[in-house]
Image (cartoon, rainbow, N blue to C red; front, side, top):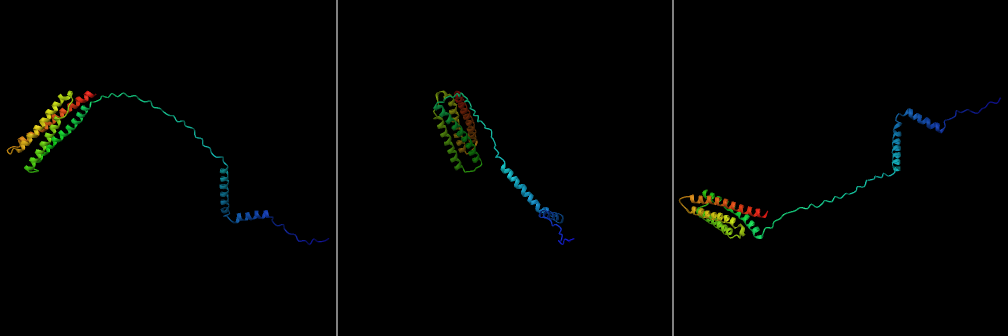
Length: 218
């Protein structure tokens, strides 16, 4: 009997079994094996997501058409009644308004002038000059009022204006004469009071005139 002298060897591991054994060994011996696997998984998920989104069809957003509706506003017919004022009357209204303002200013100036003299803010010579200037202002005002052209149908009302204006002029003269009286200030103060009364009468006459004009034109 011939003895088989070939030595017997235990079969070695194949490549597949080697990888499996190696992975198993690493898994058992290295508890941190998940550290290098997790980034690979994340990268794979991101990559697959990008590919999936890239293959999606483009979204088409449909906007419903809006029809523009134009609204036409109907013209509203309005009837306006206008009354034409003749040029002479229109000029009188403008003059009357200006005269009212000027008369009020003259009355206020008279009060101020007398108060300043009572307080002796200036000497008698300066007072005489100022009272003379005031008297000239009132006289000029009277002349302009009395020379105003007035339509025939308004002349009766204008007469009241003229009378009040003359009263204002007379009162200014009385005030000046009272200043010149060395014995008493009564004449000056009475003249001042008459200026106030005349200005009120003049203002009333102007208002009556304007009311008549407005009533005729309405």
